[in-house]
Image 1 (cartoon, rainbow, N blue to C red):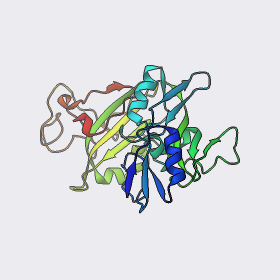
Image 2 (image 1 turned 90 degrees about the vertical axis):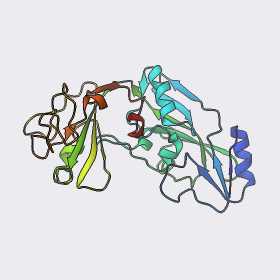
Image 3 (image 1 turned 120 degrees about the vertical axis):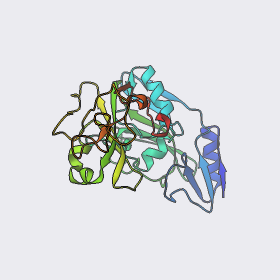
Image 4 (image 1 turned 135 degrees about the horizontal axis):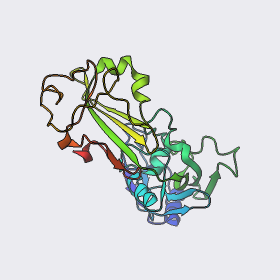
Length: 279
């Protein structure tokens, strides 16, 4: 098996037409064996990283190998955003869409739902455009195709006006609280992420991202998330309000300490942050 990295669409077409068994390769983040092959892997990461915004149509046509982190920054600078973002900045747009990567949020569709059109290099090396509006009969199934229809060169994505996001980070959510109130917790914000070490019966962190205009998170006694005072450092044993193990409100998740960004952060959906990048 070898990995080939064309620099032009014409070069990609020649590689596909001349190959016997080829597979498209994204950034390699998937935990599955979807890209395994005894033939050739073709990466689109070397194609020109174009991202052409059509303000009148509210779309961006982006090269398939462009990563979400890079795309989001370009869109934000122009006053645009995607309605939903990948959780990680380093995955490619085409790879995420072709595998139905889901992002986060009860009311957010998966990332492939933003695709309005896709350009593919098919098995004979020809270039095919499939469009949601111009060819609705052929479009379904063309986006989440797992690379089976061809190698994507560009995708056209729907955009929304840029909007700020406030992120609240909570620590140490008991496992029973998540399983017993799953719908309430996962629906508590525009985007909700839960991180766990899979040990100890507690979840390491819960991230709540609130879009601009959304109500502030409900906190205090009787709510699932309790905001403790920010003026005191967090005890290593638990909540800063008590300095003892666990928060005063039974079953609540305690917020991150001030030194670790407990205050809500204002950022654009064009600047995704992973747990690693926030440490």
